[in-house]
Image 1 (cartoon, rainbow, N blue to C red):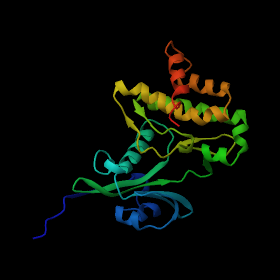
Image 2 (cartoon, rainbow, N blue to C red):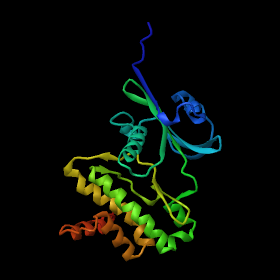
Image 3 (cartoon, one colour):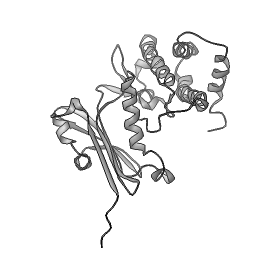
Image 4 (cartoon, one colour):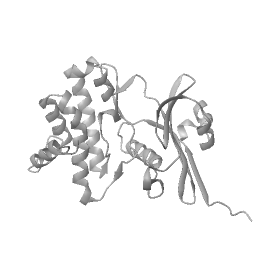
Length: 254
């Protein structure tokens, strides 16, 4: 006698994409896995591909495992972490990739495959790529000030909600390549709300991740401006201690 597999499957198509060409193309998890596109990245459990539908670009993040090592079997899957982070950002008005559809299939308590579909933010580059390609905008103080003025309150909003990104690096921040730039967060599979006891260390790590490249490509004045905006201009007695921890966070770790 064949024993039935304990299986559950969920798939959500965002309301604004229903009855649209992309909505029809990614109407189910199986359809999403069957789609073709240009592969951008690949590792042992996931691929990221870009496809185009009716002149618009979309990204397909597809996983065949919940995580690496024990994370394949224990806790929230990485793909669920990705979509929950994006939905959190949108809920609190934090600019992030537009979610088209998401979901996963679980058998015997183990995530077997899952996907997240997002709409491409046109004419954007991530900050790390801008550094690598030596994009002149980075040397434009007025342009960079506009990026900082958006980034600081967005990070503050995350932390005010006890949400820690955990990988808040320049590669995960898109910026539109125009005179008045707009930022957009991507790739946050490990982001989560944390208990108060863990919040301060998470804040220090997030800010240290940002400053890791910031100290190489921004002036001290620009970095201080970011921190003051992050604090709403209200620097308290604990800020010197926190700043010291941020500056020293990666010492001995690399």
